[in-house]
Image 1 (cartoon, rainbow, N blue to C red):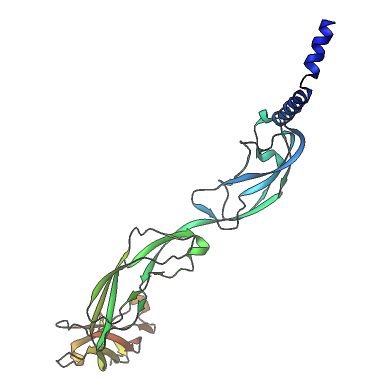
Image 2 (image 1 turned 120 degrees about the vertical axis):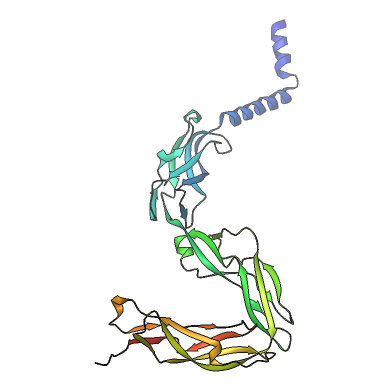
Length: 312
């Protein structure tokens, strides 16, 4: 009787607390054990590609993986989907996503049921390098009575790199603009390259240095200058004279004539001696360099080189 009374006291005294504890213990056991069935998880997608390639198409960061077994509330910590394209070439890569490529520890006791999507297409392109000139956008106008003579930047070219399709159309690398508004003296400036594209990179570590040359207002002068053929006296230029437009500062006090310039072309090589050859004259200012004088235009831009007819 004492044993029965003892058991009754154990079971019935504070029985609601004991029942709650029993349910709590059962719930904890279910959490630790996991629930049987299927669940869908977002699994990281990692793609290995050659070091000289880049993916130019849209790339998913994850895939949906359906797992079956005793599942905990969260995804398994060591699960991922790995794609190896290290031996692939340029172009479209159609990748079937199969259940046996899911990386999952065998100790988990889980089974991969499905991967969604079942196919991913990625486009690979080679990384190419190209040297392009630097362009400096000039904004504004100088102070009255002054002109912009020229600008020079350092470096004059930069090397860009990126996917072939992104790099090929790029003809120049533009910087942030330089303002010359109200300026009456030459000056230096430092500007950054403007972003080209998220996929294009430059090897330039710092800003571009720009030298801006300003001077007094210039007027246009036109001169008629003879063309000299170098290296072979048997050829002549046609036309024999070209028109050269020259910018001359208003402060220039001397006289400027055709004798201050030289226009030359090089004779064709022997293989082209019997053919009609065109060449662009090179015009230069000879004698003492006169500050601010610049050649603006040459007309015509090309001349024909003709062999002289020898008299018999």
